[in-house]
Length: 116
Length: 113
Image 1 (cartoon, each protein chain N blue to C red):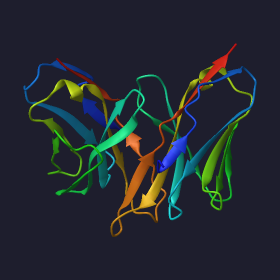
Image 2: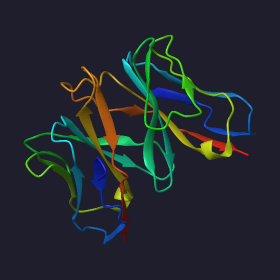
Image 3: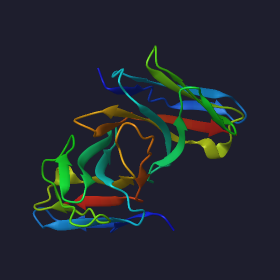
């Protein structure tokens, strides 16, 4: 089954304890992206990747890192989490986001992170 | 001005009603348009793409008006299961061949029995 898989679904951690949220897609998609969703603020892009070894900042990259060493995986790393990073996180992928293509995003089922 | 704007709602309509949402975008060079549906605390799911000529999928009709820079979603004969947040998504040219995907903040729809 074609899908985007995120883990974990729920995570409670303490300030400063490094964590990684994994994201994997089995559709051979070039483009992958991370979003956070907060009440009243909608979906905001954290980082995105156009292909292997190509990553770039989105709208809210501070406090996050990513890597794209393989096409299928795009982990989100919080080196020193803080309470303002408590949020619902989504990973998404798409075959391409070049403007000539009408390629929708496929989302993972989300990770609810709480930082105390 | 936001790049993509939606009326946040909530829209509260009776079952069987017809309801329409609009979404405006600011960049006239935008190329691709989508409507997504998001249920509470779940991932957004593609409802339909929006094509220049307009397109229909069962009870759902999407329209694009490039001159006025808006897209619309019409839901006919609404069902209780249509209750959700509807996200407008616009794909806009960025650097080189890359593009930027911009989400609206969503319109909440609640269907009452």
